[in-house]
Image (tube, rainbow, N blue to C red; front, top):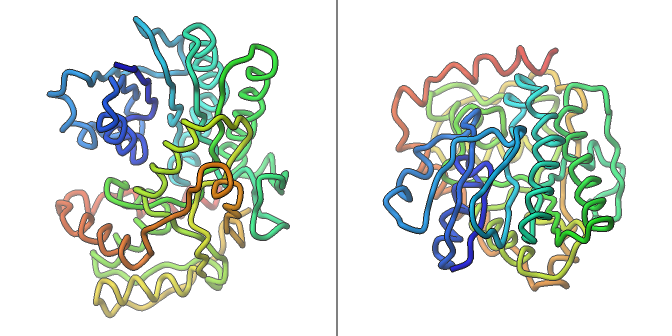
Length: 328
């Protein structure tokens, strides 16, 4: 049985990856320090013999007994409210954490996939964004702690590949959504869903003309799997190229939730990208991947998940604090 280490395993994407690789018949070693992750996301896996969980901060030395065939590095705060609240931890997991895992991959002779992000493109001057684009990032702005952590992550990964011969993969993830997202974490979909379910007006920043492209989690996981099993070492975009303005998306949410909320406008956060759309030509060419779940279907499933949350989860205070962080 092949063994795979998944960091950030109790998070949104990490937990879905645990599910996928359990189904693939692998022994899953899940690792998370639970700074943003939630054990509820993986508690259904605890009874399984081919699943184990380690509560560990990967910015410290990482030890795994026995063989390791694959490593998926998904440990990092990924939402604005998280990386603006814990900027130092965000930088450390991108730098120290990645360094530790690359060292483990070298020791174990494991293939390692690093989760990068569309945020390395910053506020792009090229549209749609291709892997060849170097980005437009404010290194000292509030979002720089996340953007630069991911950019460094890519650099050190390629250094380990070229200098040490480590078998590496790099995925650039565009906006992904689905069940197990944390409500009120500052990202567009859970923010809108939470406001709609609480009967609040939907908050749109700026004029709402900035665009995003949303990929359903099942499609994202399939793309991750195919990239891991490919023989390509350079970064690959995985996302849904179906682009929509935030204002139009807010209107879709109001229609989906059958609510009568209004849309209110607030100042645009500093360095918020105005356009975000992946060019996925490379993923199509390399391993015949493209998203299958349309937004209407995926959002309906996601809304059903959020409707099932408890009242306590629905009214957590995180959403009230978000504006204080983005103004810093």
